[in-house]
Amino acid sequence: MRHFLSTASLIIVLGVAVIGHAASWMDGLPTVPVTSKPTDKVWATVAEGGGDMAKVGIFEVVSVQGNTATIKNKIGTSFSNVPGALIHPIGSPAKLKVNDIAFGDSWGASKVVGRVKSVEAGKVTLRFKFGSALNDKVVDHAQPLVSGVKPMALVIYRNNNSPYKGLVIAKGNGKVWISTDSGHVATSAETSVLQLDMAPKGFTVGQTVYAYQWGFGYKAGTVTKIVEPYHQYEIKLTGKDKPEIFIFSEVAAKI
Image (cartoon, rainbow, N blue to C red):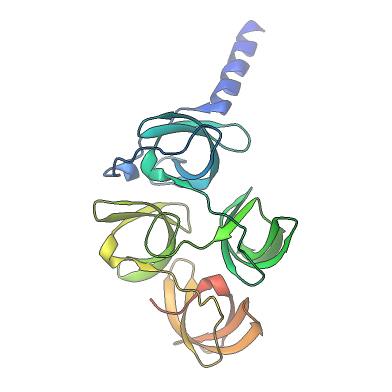
């Protein structure tokens, strides 16, 4: 019985105090002092699942050790030795209005990119795609998009010469670290990365665009119909017989 309790206690401790480790994708990260203070909420990226997997989300700063910090997620799991290069301030939702494109965080669906459906009592409802379904959901946090090629900006990067979309989680020394749609981390030369333009004012019928297909990246096509203004478009991809419907976040104005 005593052995069982000791084992159970060990499991609980491990569940609430994860010791951070330097995953291989962290190699070459710039040295950046942590400017956030304990109890601050921040965007951060932590190693997950081994290899080049990582989790991006909003965490609370527990303590700061110069160029690293200990942070915890919403359920209290702690991550230590998180480099300052992977810790960034959260933006304000104050200026968001209906139909704006916003980036946000929602428990169970991190890296949310959606259009604002409503703002009520400071709570933001986003329409976004999760899996294969569209969701209208009050998110835990929403903020305006970050412009340029900088941390927490949505960008287009190249893999084997094919264009893909991702989120910048760190930048420095001429390189950009990008969280991909599959949760992996890719690195690219800064000069080869482009800000993702999802046309904040919407696309028009007849416009040449680039639609995103999982595993294949962006493919050229033409808008044939506006299914839902700002939100959904029917697009005929080059080489395809029939048009398909895409949510705005899957469509780029240029690559």
